Length: 171
Image (tube, rainbow, N blue to C red; front, side, top):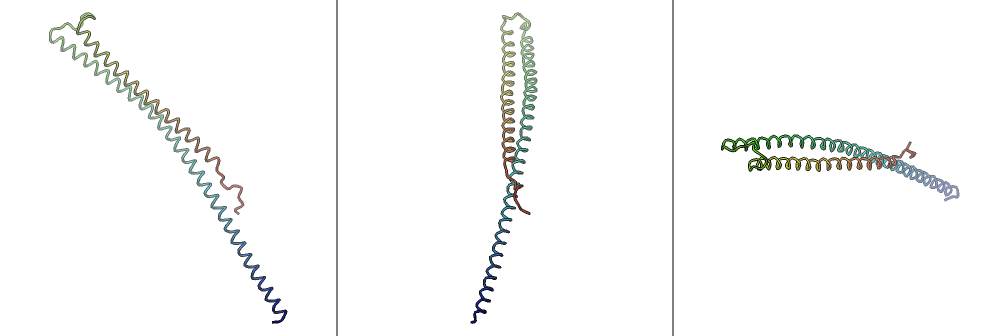
């Protein structure tokens, strides 16, 4: 082999190596570009998930407040129904006593007055218990709503913290 042939082969080998290195650099650049796009897409998806979850939590808070109002209305209706039942029971007791010859509109120191007053007091106690239980349930619904709002705030914060790749050189 002559010196020129060896030199030509060396130059050719160097050129092939240069082309190979350029292709490797281009492939590495494309992989980095794809990784940047994937990272940006993942960040955007995470931000959107957090925004969605925040909205779900806000919707849940509205439902919790609606539940609280519903509990209050249901307690009022139940108390009214129970009050009518108590009055009907007292009236029926007085009717039975009168049918058996007892004076039902007698003084406060009679047994009949004691019995009917006991029915009224027990009925009032039942109604107070209904309202108390409803207040506890209503409070629980309000607290649950506040928890949902807090969760929504957390998801909003998470969504605002995500890096969506705005600064990446992807183009």
